[in-house]
Length: 92
Image (cartoon, rainbow, N blue to C red; front, top):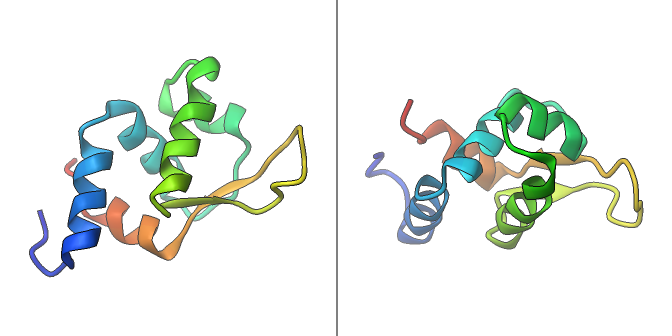
C-alpha cells in the first residue's frame, strides 16, 4: 500500500480491497473509459445482478460516478479522480 495517501483515501482503499467484486469493478473502469454496468460486469466477471450494488458502493465512497443518473437504462459510469488514485494503489 502507498503511504503517500491521506487517511481518508487509505480507508477507502481498504474498503475496496476487502471485496473482490469492488476490486474487479475498479479494474474494469481503470482504462478511463465510460461504461455501462453490463460491460463492467462482463469484463470484471461479476454477475449482472451484483454489479449495481457494487457500483452503488463505489459511488457512495466517491470512487465512481454515474454521468447520466436520470437515465433508467444505459447508465454510464467512470472512476472519479479519487477512484483513479485508489485503483492505482490496488494490489495486482
